[in-house]
Image (tube, rainbow, N blue to C red; front, top):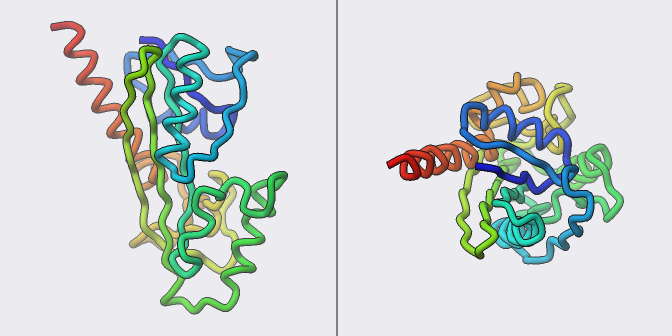
Length: 201
């Protein structure tokens, strides 16, 4: 089966490829379809954004498309940055500025109230209009300063539940076993394996 990973984020593509090793799919990315239009992620939810993007890419490429929308929800900030995680510090923001804004917002929050979770929705869309979503989440807490050089986004300040190292201090395999995207992709892998079995019956 051919599958288009609907993102231009190189680190995200690498993470998805690692987790999907062994799945019988031929992966493409948006780089293979330079004319594919940008999709405005304005659905208001992770699930809605992921499905909107996957559906648009499947329609354009005429191939099944896999998209994800994910982000960080901080309880003390009423769920912010949420769906605005990638542009928390503004439309032109990068990881460094988003991280700086989050730590600034959390400056006066005591240890017991620094709980947060990463959420990921994966959407698989087919050119005929069918679609399915897979959810993963990772509970944890926000640290007071960035630690570690791996990962991306808010990984340097996120301590997953039960651990004293941030996602950015963990190896790829360690993070994938705990992360929101790893859990969602695990469900997707199970679905694809089942699909492959059905096709060979």
